[in-house]
Length: 130
Image (cartoon, rainbow, N blue to C red; front, side, top):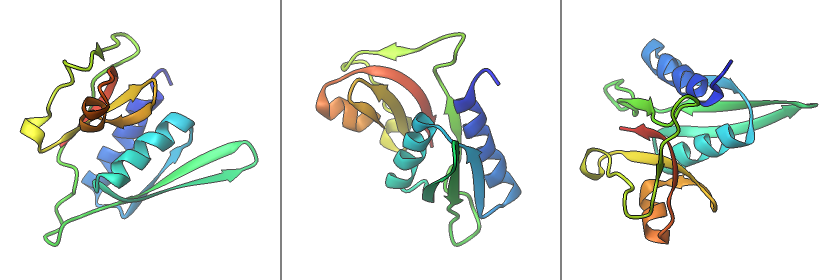
């Protein structure tokens, strides 16, 4: 697998389309932080990291509305291994006029675009969520 973050986002997207309650993802520190940001922003219900020896697994509880509609309408990978996308503090994009979030990897950790803009730091745009 060349892009584990894209794999994680695809697993979440597919689980929402299939109507699953949760999805298990092979774990890493970066994927755990992305899941944490999604949970803090209310796009997923929960994220739990379990370890069995050296193997980590991230269980993401998916969130649906009262009508059964998924909480995440679109989740898209921006920076890829073939094309990294970096932005400065002044160039952090607003996703759908503030209705979505961008997840950014900065020198201070992984955070939303709004938080990075408030802290006045730039970084690599990992993905956008609407």
